[in-house]
Image (cartoon, rainbow, N blue to C red):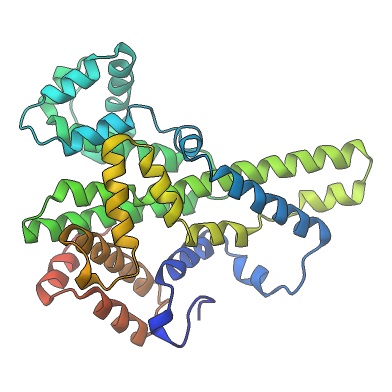
Length: 342
């Protein structure tokens, strides 16, 4: 049974269980590493420095968004467009045409093979915004561009976290799909809950990318010092050190605070989504949440349930308790069960 699983299901940390599962899937040796009683002095010192660096970097959410994830500065504007209440594409046109570099960058994204793959677009090369809007309406194009930005972030060269990043992306996409389905059934704003759910992957992706960057930097610096001082034994040991995954897992399982900070960097709509996700993360029963927060809480819980249950991480009792805490009706469960898995 998973290290996070507890006999008292009411105190089970399902978020911790979920990220523990993803980390174990990426690092097959992690279970063995957890059983080690002591670590070498070099590993211990490296872990301590890495933990401190992770804490310090989390205090600069804008850098995590626009440097570590390389999300373009147009993202706040795209979020505003997704939530725009007008029925025309005028807002999209004004936003894009206000800056020539923005129009050029968005056209590059729309013509990227990966963007066409995730949107199912098969048209020829798009040469103007008008051509793009002929294929997608403004809101849909903005929504697809935000998702594509996360796809690009997850696909960045991350050496030993590629699978983890891909799973985080798939989970956030599935979460958005579940939330949109529930919102549609209840007559709520599917765009809001879908977007608030999709960006749930921002903080985990930023943590993963930052972990890889900082670990590589620490190793490189330590190797240079060991080589310059002629410490061959330390040099050889550093070359064989595995990433201190406990540090990564600890930050993933408590990523909600960083998630709120990242969203707050994304303009007025980002702040609105941050307020909504704070309510979702509040220590309240699902019945006491607003309708929108209920949908996101239920979609997130159901998505985690499906991933953990498929991996046989949950006991039958835990599966039953998790579903009961979500307060989903039989109709809701039927709707969600029919959704195509990513």
